[in-house]
Length: 479
Image 1: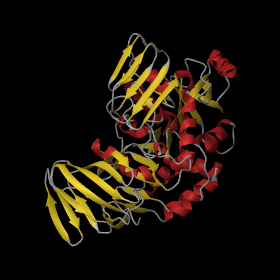
Image 2: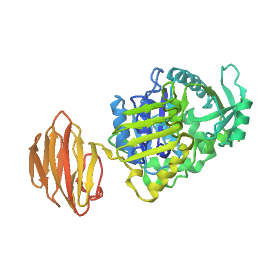
Image 3: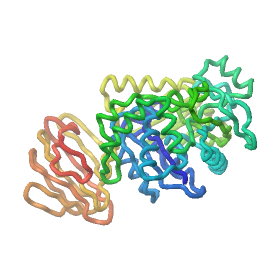
Image 4: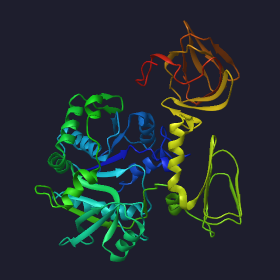
């Protein structure tokens, strides 16, 4: 059996302002109609004996991840990391959970934020990797380089595996090189970009991590000793997992295999030419998107004149580019990025500065997704705030109260069921109601269509942390 293990813990700060901490790049449809996470879930479709995916994600992203998997009609297991501890502990959790079910699948480990254009070629490479993994090997994929890239680590391939077409022994992992070293690797022809994709049996990984990093294995076992299921989610013990050392698959195990540490499984690398990209920055996204004759790629309401080799994204208004080249222009409702295509790695510096200054643009978009729907901050001023709220059919917000604000609700589509103190009322289109400060209240959508309403908040403090929850369908507690 093949178990897709999808790692969805990244923040994607180099793709700001589209990617933000609470809604990062893997949740966005950057290439095609599906989000990058959804495209990863679908990536193994067509292979035989593939189980439902196991996804490891940040606890803050749990509802968005679960909803995107549900939209695909899948029933994946979502394992929540209370804190990020890199890829080695994440894969260890997945392996131990699989083995608990008396299964020893071939795990296909895939980051949720990568692009692979040629799915058929990728699946063919996975078939070969699974066959090798069944013999006890750990298999990774190396991307055939087409330039002296300094933003990736490299894998040096060794001798060809007997009886295997285009599969090699793993010689060594090397860090991100300078440009001169990267050129030497390219000229030598035996170095591949490190893709971060792996295939191995669950038991093989458990034994390898136990030999190389017994502290990681022990911490993950303790974290799973008190595991609990919460709806769609698997929650590990917070304190035990927080005590786990942070390490990557490469550092924890693969480099030690390449160095010949005794008692470890053999490792292989399969060269892959399938249009792979980790979409680490805007220039990487430009490379994988379709372009016009002038080398421009765009999305949204964009007009280009006398423009070349430029990437333009628009979310909410017209973006016009005239007489420019080699630029990245990204518009969102609350931020605009303009950068030279050669400097897109430095976008991370802006995201870091926003975080240091505690600005909301680092954390969330103007439109914020919630398990019950979404809200969009339309306008704000001194002592008031206006939001557009959308509630899914059958969904409800928590029973809550605010210390510092009152709320006016106007329904513009659908019907709202409103709990206000001891009374319950239905509010239809073009009707409104008022929630006084300090009164317990709840908003529900009892219908089969989306509920849309305008909320006007007024008061001395309008922050999202002024919420006291008494009951919540989604397990959110307290303030």
